Amino acid sequence: MTVEITFGDGKEDPELRVGELGVTESRNGNRTYRLEIWHDGLNRHRMLRASDLGELENKVRLVANDWVTRWQAQQEREDGKEAAAALTEDAQLALTALEETLRAGLALNTRVEWGELKDHSAFTQAPPAEPKVPTYPPPPDRLDYRAKPSLFDRLFGRVPEVQAAARAAFDAAEAAWQAEKERIDRSHARRTSEYRQAKEAWHRAKRKHEERQHERNTGIDRQRADYEQRKARGVEDYFGIVLNASKYPDWMPQDFNLEYRPRNKTILVDYSLPTLDSMPRLREVSFVASRGEMKEKVLTDAQARRLYDLVIYQLVLRSVHEMFTADYREAIGSVAFNGYVTAADPTTGRVVTTCILSLHVAKDEFEALDLANVDPKACFKSLKGVGSSQLHSVTAVAPIMEMNREDARFVGSRGVAHSLDEGVNLASMDWQDFEHLTRELFESEFSSQGGEVKVTQSSRDGGVDAIAFDPDPIRGGKIVIQAKRYTNTVGVAAVRDLYGTVLNEGATKGILVTTSDYGPDAYRFAKDKPLTLMNGANLLHLLERHGHRARIDVGEAKHRA
Image (cartoon, rainbow, N blue to C red; front, side, top):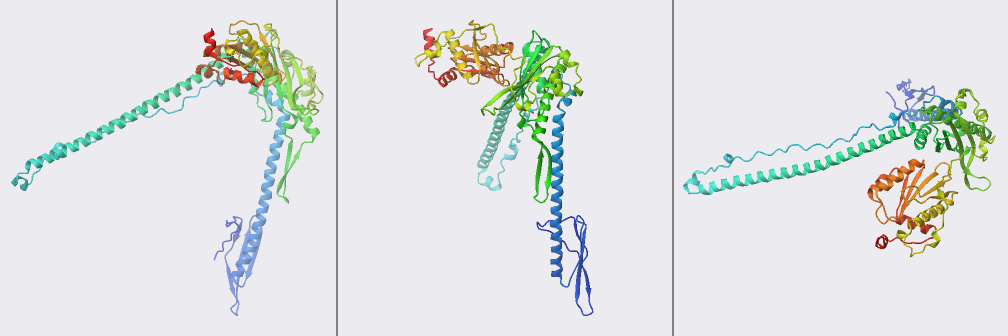
């Protein structure tokens, strides 16, 4: 006899085994039952005896449940230890990766492979299935409906009636067949129409895929040509791709702004650096069996600050190395790197963006270094980099080189907004006044963030009407603004011109402001591009936000013109 033992949740414990039930009988007829049990996991063994089967079963269950409980606790401890060991290993790998930030970058091929950027994906949507040629049921056979008069039909002259009934039955069958044929034809026509519509939709989707693919690939070709011809925007785009391709942990912002100066072949990088608080500090995890919980050990403040400074110095050197190594057209002769940290100022509590280190290095000087063996901080200092001795203190330094805001086209501006009231129709305003009003509005918009807006010489040639400088080192930069005091819908040509101007100016964004509105092609072209289209309603809302009121009546402006 075999006894099956289960524990609390009713499942069998694979480590628990029981033997055969044994019975011995004394001379006076008394029986003794015995059962041997083992627990392989705990390496336990017992021989249990009882004079009654029920008593024996209770003993077995008590021992078995005790063993199972002990085994489960031991397994949980082992699982906890394994989990803690895995977490510790992950933490150590993460910290080691930070210490090896520069070395890891040296092994990378940073040159952009243009072909890999292109979209070569096939259009995977299956075409709709063409409906099958319809099949019709066989038409009724007149022979099957011929009259069959009986003897009595002949005797009593009912043959004509029988013949008429046969013809009627055939006509009804033929009409039903014709109706079914027409139903099949209608169904086939409907399916054919649906198929044609689906096929047209499929072709449209395929063309859209190919157009998007062509647009992307053409854009890649244009980017490549612009870089190889050393155009400012092309060089900036190229090194943007290079820096974006560098792999860093998710807690690093990896945001930056670039400016290329072709005269001295310098690329200026304003780079957003992580804060000390964002850096992981976990170094070890242990499992406390008595409490059934994990205990974490982290880097001390001194260790975290040392590692943070080490990572930042390595990030700077690695970024410069990646750009010089990727520059197969010799577009840059030097790199200016400004590292910014955005954090709360401990003295005011306000969130500020601070430059904490700056470096300007020539290519020949940098390429003479053996980066695999340098001390990152000492190397940075030897290159005449500027920064506090303790980067984690977020001490501000003056950038060695800042982004250029000078432009010979800038002219003096004049205030216009103060003269507005609800009776002023912007659509009929003097076009020069409208440009100055646009500048004034955006100056109010950017001034709270420390920005500035400058108006350019009036030309009415579709060029730049104003230029804004957003001081945010990452999201900001140079913004081109065009003002269109129009009474007709603004077409896609004006938006294309703006986009071309953004590229030629090396700006990060373009804003088009009009008193009218934009056509669907204009909105479609602006989609997914660094362009903002503001119509008359948006303009009035912006005016109201800054305490001014006016109106736009396109019909009235047309009539006056």
